[in-house]
Amino acid sequence: MIVVLLGPPGVGKGTQAERAAARFGWRHLSTGELLRDEVVRGTPLGQQANVYMLRGELVPDAVMVDMVAEALANVPEDAMVLLDGFPRTLPQAQALAAKAPGGGIRLALYFHAPDAVLVQRLLGRGRPDDTQEVVERRLAVYRQNTEPLVAHYRNLGMLRPIQADRPVDAIQNEMTAILQEALVAR
Ligand code: AMP
Image (cartoon, rainbow, N blue to C red; front, top):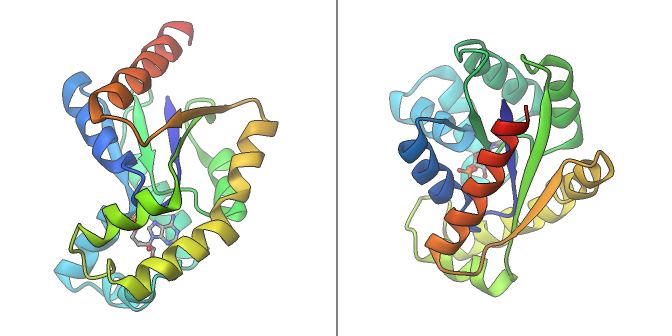
């Protein structure tokens, strides 16, 4: 089962996914982490992507769709995959719906928190793309390109909102309860 983790940068979905994956043996697939790995290894893809990442812009859809298709091809059909940071655009969502193995996507967890909380968290992290200027750009890019996916998945009946300005444990419990339930129902 592939579950989409949707939400603005800094909302904490990566932290939650990592924790849940470690506890239950699920896969955490973060496109941001895959890209940062390419950057560190200095691959052509990494060098190309880094230009966008450092500006807070999105890496082109075609690059991302190929990257995720390849990553998903290496995952067993019955695995629980927490897809973090993808899709970020409608074309990415459509590509995923068409290509995802094992019956596609049935669930999108939507992590939400007020902007002030997001900005505070992002500026405290210290990643190269966490400067004030880039953070503002990333939030604007999120609003314009990614936020429409909230309505998209809501219209498909797949959206489960999670209030993310709460203690980490409370969010983790709510998230894993939803996912355990979905696993039982599949
Ligand atoms: P993240 O770790 O999810 O915040 O991603 C860091 C950066 O990687 C983003 O600001 C984008 O530049 C790039 N990125 C990650 N995932 C995607 C995606 N699905 N589509 C386009 N760009 C992405």
